[in-house]
Length: 534
Image (cartoon, rainbow, N blue to C red; front, side, top):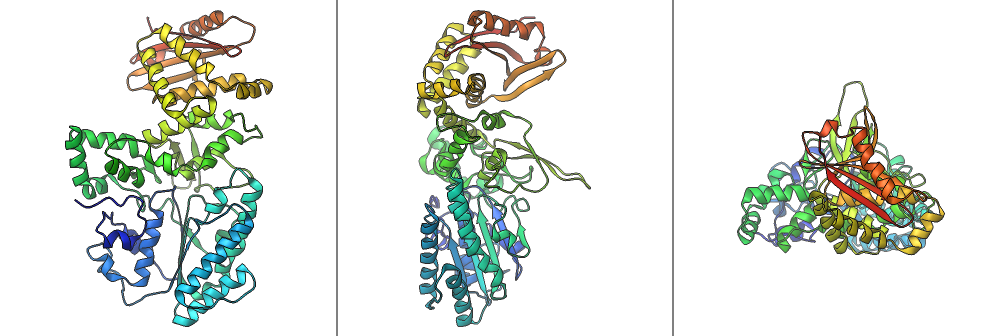
């Protein structure tokens, strides 16, 4: 049984030490054309760096590494090229530090090629690096840029710093335009496609293949079952579960990422961690989630550090999230939360509606259980003083109490939920008159963590209900009330009566329907749950 290449992103290391390699060289054979320039966007820890490393060894002509792979007898091994490999996992804590890091990077490349650098600034030194390598080998260069946007997106909640880093990279990448005569092929990876960055505006004809090759990174179902069959069998035996049941669980937890709405892939880091650790857990979220995501939710729309933007959070409850047209650009000045979630992997393309003569329409969704549970647990910890483990335990308790219609237990759980809200946070939302939307977002976040599919503000023939929660055959119809003058008992009774009187339940009578009324006051709550009796 081959070893798992966890945290190994270097192709030569992986092959020489006989780790599992999921062969993606077919895609290289399909896309490579002399003079072409490609861009690929994928979330972090999704195999981009390994793909770039594979390209590097191909263009260097290291034939022995590719024996047995798809491309082995299809590549011209006589044609080799000097490769400039730029890994932008560098210091971007200031534009000066970024420029210093880029200078260090090209100096290291110059030493590797034994060429001398000339020039008084970064632009001239990078230009001369390309020319000197070209002149030494009398060959055009291949330029590979991995995580081109990292110094920008790592600072995305600090607009001034992110913009300063963007400008530095703008000038740096702009050299590739003026040096095209010396370059054979360019391949660029990143998490986001930033607008107004010279790597796209300055270069001619950069082809964005983000949506064109949905399986270029990540593992397909077929690849999972073929390359990891020994690890699947071992896991099944060790945990006394059948292969089919195990594969169903793996799919629920880690599958679902798609860039065309048809082909779905697994997150590589999660799969490797699953088999290495021997248990299900939220691996990719814990390792791949940039802090800016939660910071962006917390800080956006000019709400200070002690509050959450419910405009952003409500995006996650919208079951009809769509984009139309091309894969959206990432704009620093006016960040769109849906674009941020899509490009960083917390939303994915669920369905694609392609009609001839019209712009394509993409329906978006959270890809899988790992992302759903981790994301909402993290959001809830921003609402409360609880850590993620306590949040998960309380969510399971609330779900059990709803299923059992345990009003006493549910009331105690909701009381614990309210009491866990930090006083400073509550004071800030109260001062801004945001209590109602805050409670609404917090409550629905809990239900998402429980695994419910949420339809928010559902329009029926008799009115608009706050939310319908679906989980297998269970449907919870919820009405939420908020007030500072009316009693909680009166409000919660009104909530349940409204569900019944307006017959919000009519289209759900084939399900196991539960009615839930929740009333919020000034840091207090009242709930009532009951079965549907008609």
